[in-house]
Image (cartoon, helix red, strand yellow):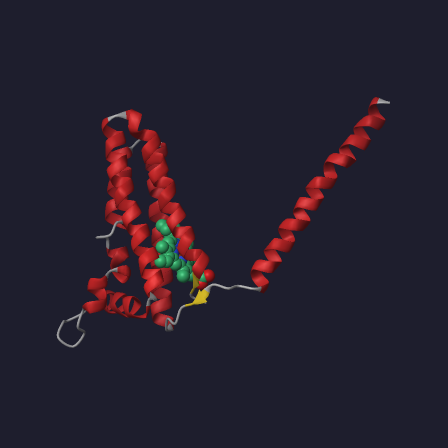
Length: 178
Ligand code: HEC
């Protein structure tokens, strides 16, 4: 009787799992089938540069999370400011000063040239989302330094850290490069 119960119960509990898997698969297919994100008009060299910049963003975020998880709040703040913050080199393509650079009068390195191109081709809505993300990194840094001084501030810093990742997601939901 016990064995029969186990078999029947096992089958019943398997069914919802199967149904979930099927729904996930359908959702996955519909994402592939109708991608409504706006395609950016980046030439190949700008796209390769922008994607490499994105991978650096992810690397920085991973390092921030690692430092934070090990209670190295000051280190986490430093990485956030210098590698993701509004004044970091990775934010250049989202800054208006890159857009205003005059290529004829200013000698330009290859990276500033690509940042300039990226900033010119970036839709206004995307620039705003980009700046929000870079600013959220600076805001996290402030909170992380407060956590470094007083551990009662750790929870607020953790919320600010989650906000950075939310800003990455917001842009990825709306734009694509390829
Ligand atoms: C302002 C917009 C924007 C923000 C903010 C943004 N991204 Fe992206 N990211 C993009 C776009 C557009 C792509 C290309 C996606 C596509 O073509 O499917 C991309 C691609 C990527 C990729 C793929 C790189 C590759 O080589 O294919 C990674 C990784 C990534 N982003 C990480 C991040 C992380 C981490 C953050 C936040 C810290 C972030 N991005 C914030 C716009 C953004």
